[in-house]
Every structure is written in structure tokens, then in C-alpha cells.
Picture 1 (cartoon, rainbow, N blue to C red):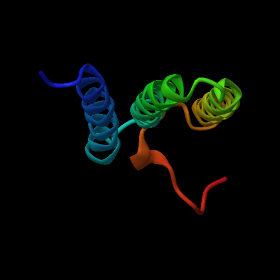
Picture 2: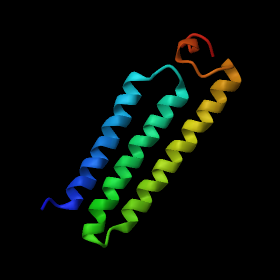
Picture 3: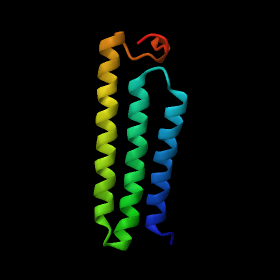
Picture 4: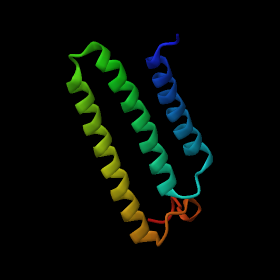
Length: 100
């Protein structure tokens, strides 16, 4: 019988690669890119928690990782709000380096 944790790790890797694929292919809106980054971070956290549950003593590393993910999400959301207020939308085609 195949180990159940192997299927869980495979599910984590599928989540990470699906998030990476959506980050690369769906780049019309900034919000889609931010959501795919958060989906990748969720897959990485799931895999990290699976690996750390086997060890048992390194739960604080997972909390530190969650803190960094929340900070990344808050920074992305604040940039999205700033861009929507200044440009009126979140299309990547409307952004220009010359216009501030």
C-alpha cells in the first residue's frame, strides 16, 4: 500500500505548479497575479506543515512563514489599491514606466 503522505506531498506540488502556471499565463490583471502568488504560498505552507508535523518540534518556523506570507499579501493589496486609485484599473497594459 502506498503511503498517504506521498499523496499529500504530490497534492502540494500540484498546487504550487498550478499557481505558477496561472501566474505565468494569466497576466491581464494585477489581482490575478496576486491571487496566484497567494495560492502558491498556500501550497508551500501546506507542504511545510506536512514536513514539520513529522519532525514535531519546529512549529515556530511555520508561524514565521505565515507571518511573512501575510506581510506579502498586505503589501500586494496596498499596491493594488494604490494602482487602482492612480490609474483607475489594474490592467497590466495600462501601466507605463514613464507615467508616475
